[in-house]
Length: 251
Image (cartoon, rainbow, N blue to C red; front, side, top):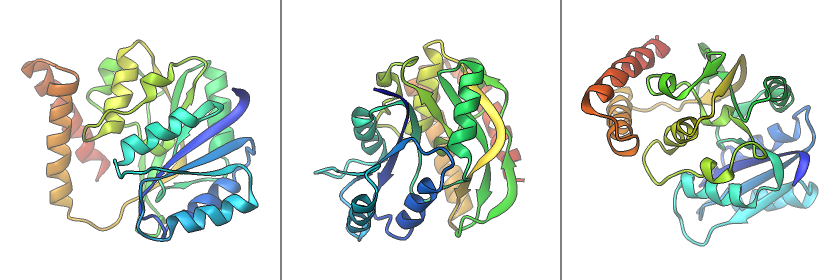
């Protein structure tokens, strides 16, 4: 395992509209010691072909192909399993990193001597242009506080795999698998440290907001009851806090 190497895992499914921008964005990072693991989950568009073309030009870019479509969580897990770096970052194919994302976040992780860090982010429109809606993050986030605030966004995290077992980073096959993973890690005694600086743009295509809200409510409730196995009273308490903060983020 190379100490200075950051492994970036990207699940890819029919991401042809974004994948060139994603790869070029990573190539423009000011921190150059990375490997980009693009896990193709049986795409039916030109995603695989585009990745192969970039891989011929840059040996840091790797295409990993899955034989059966299994969803983003399993695609990430495949990438985690093959990651060679000491450090691990997740990136979704349609999100955007600012050029100094890796550099500044790695500096922050080392300063805090942390195993798990994340950053603030900004909501973007369909073209990933910032909308001015920023999600600020707390300086530290232990398990109990994390239950009522889903403030950790997948494309902002960075892990030190010498300090955290990669099995803990593997995502379960549940809805909102990313949140379930952060809670699992924190439940095992780790603390997540937040760098309150916007280094990621969360692209949000136009969808039915009412539909998204209903799905989010059902998912978070299932996590409380089925994954965390919280009592009804604790689930209601955390759900109230989560709902308030989720509504506030959209104002």
